[in-house]
Image (cartoon, rainbow, N blue to C red; front, side, top):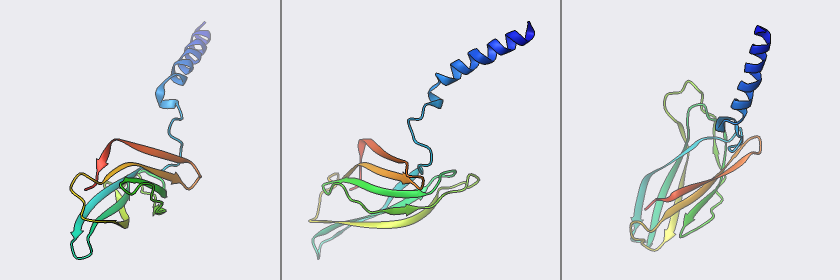
Length: 140
């Protein structure tokens, strides 16, 4: 009787766990968790440009991969192919910055006019995910 009760509990428990959202594969395995920072933005009045610098980090426990697309407005769909390395699980702070990407826009743009709507990250296993920023992140 005791074995039957344990078997029924295991069967029902597995059924409940399989319905849990933690076990759904909405986010493919092997995609790095990327942190993007904007440490500097400047206006080059001599050349009539607005210049942004983006730095890319990975969070502790994250595998390596590539940032394959930045959807930035007013210059949408940049394909920079930024390599980010794996970050050890025991690391306290994010790893990096791996790359500092400088982006320039023609004209002196007013604050609030440059936004990032999404970015795409691909793991070394080929898994890819588009991260939509809602609301869009104001870069400048």
